[in-house]
Length: 116
Image (cartoon, rainbow, N blue to C red; front, side, top):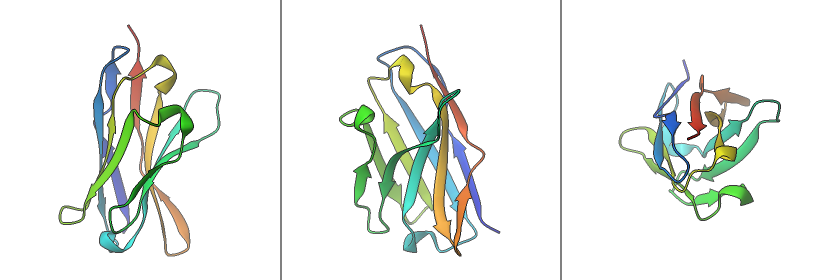
């Protein structure tokens, strides 16, 4: 059974940092590209970043380039999203994702709120 479990969200002040973690299980993690998405209230889900099975990361959202970094640890089945210089507009539920067995797989999400 595929499971993606996000953690690390919370309330942070503008300019602060957070590291999100996604723990994956139930599929051969080291063979699959992993993604981070986010969804803000009233907005569509947006792809933030992706990372290949080899560890090549790409930031897909122009609004976070230079501030967010994606990485993974294939030995631990973990993928990370390092977020810095956070802005109120980064407030959203952040989701881990992969495309396995012809289906998108999603975690339950972790809430990130950037507010003073």
